[in-house]
Length: 338
Image (cartoon, rainbow, N blue to C red; front, top):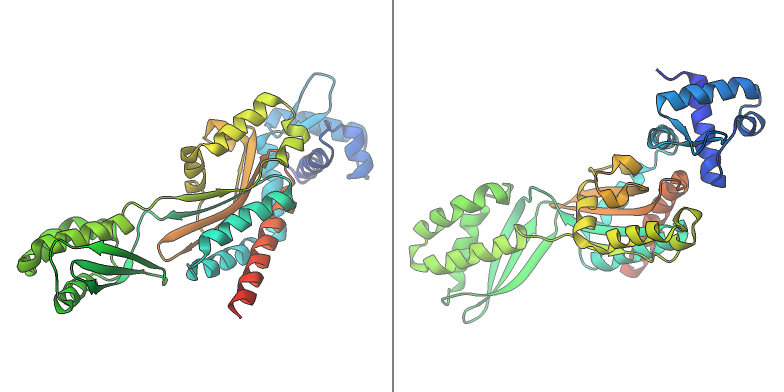
């Protein structure tokens, strides 16, 4: 169990190391942060904290630097203090409800976060494991051609022109939509397998058309792909933490691989600020890095906006930057709407 004084020492070491990038000695902590404690007392505490896994030495005679466990202690204290998760998530959900242009907004967010944080901004829109639809409509456009409209819970709308194997009159299309809408609010993944037999039996004269319609809906809802936007990496290459060529190459390779980024954003939990630090990341390419991201959910989709940087990132600055960028984009979208 960590004592209050040990907590103060850990927070002081992490804060100083984030600011300076240099190992932190007991005298520095005593002089700059814990002025009521002697250097000898702090040195003993730092030794105990090293044994506990919160601090480590780069070599025998050096000061200490934080471990992943030490960073986690610091980040949790920052999250309790700034309490910024709520506004960020509300802004994300608001943007998602106005689906038109969401991709451009997220792309702008990733670029802006790269500039204001000096790290790598990322943004993504990803389907949730369970997509629930609210309403389905078919509009006959011409012979064999139909406009499919699928409204998800939360108000997001998918639309697609589809080619039907037969020419269905609008009345039959309305009947098909009516039968589908009996399942409003259900998870598509739970009902899609049984719908085909049920609907083709009820609308037997248009069996092939019903099958085609269900395939098209499944293509919209069942195989959604995560869209990822990455800001510039040029800023991060200037950082002290990434002067090692192999390290920056490894991170850039990780970011450029779509499957890696998809796995990373999918690990973000919902409706909070997510922070994954160093060894907490199960993905090898992120072992020496950290992710801070806000996540919002609306209409069967999840949006993630965040920053990738070194373990020694300025977490408090990044959390504030995410909130600030989302506020700016929300303000700009409001002005365009007016």
